[in-house]
Amino acid sequence: MTGWGQGISVKTALAALIVAGAMLIAGPTPAHHSRAMFDTSKQVTLVGTVKEFQWTNPHCWIQVLVPDSKNPQAAPVEWGVEMGAPVELMRKGWKPGSLNPGDKVTIIVNPLRDGQSGGLEVSVTGPDGKIIGHPAAETK
Image (tube, rainbow, N blue to C red):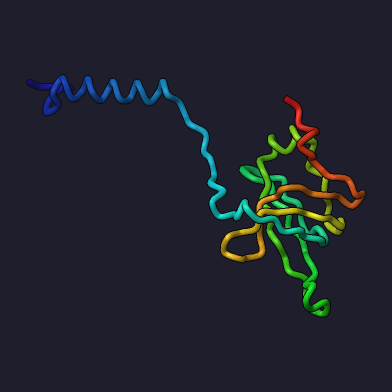
């Protein structure tokens, strides 16, 4: 036998075509990031100043400077607060300019399990005293 099929059986070629076709039909699957690194059984309240609000994919972030309550003379501790994707936050009322550097905020987070200064956003109260992106603002 010569040409295209040399060295490949018809059954093998047919199986490869079926697998390739099934993969094309299935299409891409969305990625999901695990939240296992956060202790969702605990909540920590952070009162501090926004250093940076990152409106980025796949997740938005708030970098917040939190004074050390045990040692007010010490430099503030920078916390990284992970949020949802921009499209998810927009549905809840967030905008790219919802927070600005220097804003005084209160953020409730599920802390990182390893004790580092980071967490998953539960709620954010802005400088005006109102919750930003409250779940009640979510549109369906």
